[in-house]
Picture: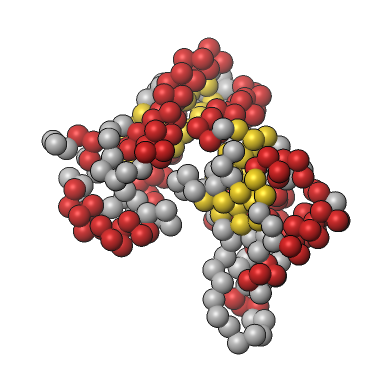
Length: 286
């Protein structure tokens, strides 16, 4: 993430941080067994990340789509604005895990919710719904899960309009899934339905925002390595690879490439499309 944020240039008007899939925004760092001593070389560079977010000359928005736990809760709080799905959960777990704040988390938490509430959140490790987090001051807006992309676009609309021109429109790139284009093999009813909703929202917004010189497209990825897919790939990895005409799982560069295309001048005349990045799965004969 630090590497990506350091690449933000004058062409970027806003940064959105969200999680992969529908279940997790961020659940912090890995907690491993240790000898009880603090070894600073093992501490993640969270201070560098927080300072980078704080110093970026553009707004940084957290789109919390699921669990924001530990360092994930701190990350959402560090962002300038937080839009949360109504299925999101916020929680600090440091004392429970024998961990500590490796950055500015406690300081920013107190600044956001006040000293008493910050101590409650940090000491008691309670779970908070998105609505409760909004009441505490941790969240700016709560949206129904399938509508989160819509509310985020609305929140960014003034920035998009300011950046847009006839020759170089502003861009909205939504992330759907090939499971929103077909009936999936696995019984992921809610997931596939929510992704189909993202695809149709993309088309509707493309029509609505075209006059404002804003393009709206979606990417529908196939199988990629991620935390969400880890167990599925461990169990069915060989079968999934065999089902892909190109014979492999997607790589990060595949998603980066389509995003760069859509955000570049090459994609300036494209709007309302849903582009599968799936190695040919959706065109494979049944």
